[in-house]
Length: 115
Length: 113
Image 1 (cartoon, chains in turn blue, purple):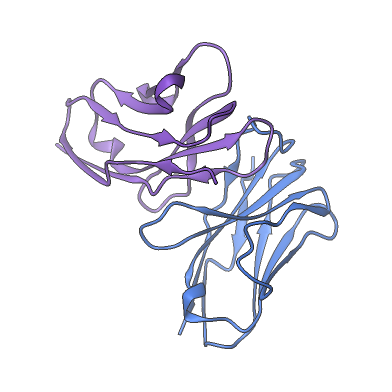
Image 2: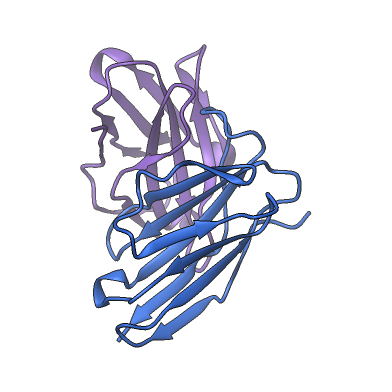
C-alpha cells in the first residue's frame, strides 16, 4: 500500500518568504508527526496530531512555525518569515494510533533551503 | 529533558565483520526503544523496537538489539554485515505511552566488499 508522501520534495526560498509543506499520511492512521532534521543530526520532534487536533506542539521552535490537519488526514506545516537557520529536511511520520509503542512510518521528507 | 547518545558517529567495516552500535538514553522511567535505518536515497524505516518482555529483540535483516535497563542502553548488533547494510542508523526513545520520538545523532555505517 501507499506510504507517507510529502510534497514538494525540494523547496528553495528566499529569506523572509512564507512556505507550506504538505504531508499525506498512510490511510487510516490517526496520528501524524512532524520532525526536522538538520545536517549531521537526528530528527527533532516538532508537533504531533491526534486526529485534527495538535496533541503536542512543544517542539515548534517559535511562533513562525504553525501546522494544521483540518480533516484529520493531510497536514500542512507552515513557516512564516523564513530564516536561513530553517534550512533542513522536514520529515512527516504517521502511526496507527499514536500510542508510545506504535511504529512511526516516515515519509521521504521535504528539503527546505532558505537563501 | 530526555536525550539519546550514539557514540559511534562513523563506522567502517569489511563485509562479514561483526557490528555493534552503541545507544544510551537518559530517561529513568519506562521507555520504548527503537532503531531506525536510512539507506542511501531512501526514507527512515524501522529496524526493530522494544517495548516490553524479552530484552533481546530481533529485527529485520538479521539485526538484533539488547535492552539493558541498568545501563540505560539499547545497543544494535549484527554478527556479519553485508555491503547492503551501508546506511545511517538512528536510535530513538520515547517515554512510555507518550508520542514523540527523541532521536540520537545517528551512526553512519560504511561496509566495504
